[in-house]
Structures are given as structure tokens and as C-alpha cells.
Length: 99
Image 1 (tube, rainbow, N blue to C red):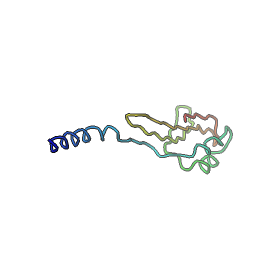
Image 2: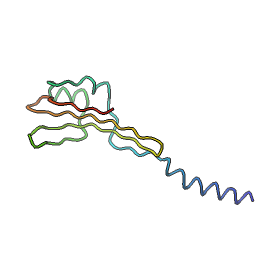
Image 3: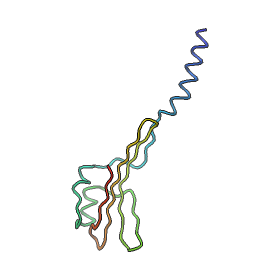
């Protein structure tokens, strides 16, 4: 009976443990530094405060979007941080935040 209980517990753990695993994407970034970024700052000022962007995209109007993204999820909860700045003519002209 004790052996059977041990097998049931092992089987239950082998099913439940992978479900509780955490999945992450991107890398954490400094939220306080993101809050200091303002329209009109240069790209150099932004990257000095935030570090190198994790993503760079050029839109149809020629603006460069610099992105910092971090997400962490499990079956119990998820957390997403996203910070995007649009650079036009070397300066920030748009900021999008989701913390």
C-alpha cells in the first residue's frame, strides 16, 4: 500500500510540476529609468538611460521604434512590461508604456 501511495504521488507531481513552471520572454528593464524618458530626448539619451533596445522597428513613415519588453507567465498569473519609444529625426516623438 505504501508503495502504491508513493507511485500516485510521483505521478501527480510529474503532471503538476510542469504546469507550475514559469515562462519568461525578453529581459527585465529599469521602470524608474523608463519614467524619466520624455518627448524631445535624443536617441543617445534614451539608450544611455535604458540600455540597448531589445527590438528596433522602422514604421511606414520612417520612424524608428525602440522597444524594451519583459514578460513572465505561469498558470497562476502573468506580468508584462512594455516600453516603446518612437524616434523621428533623432528625437523621441512618441512614448508607449505598459507596466
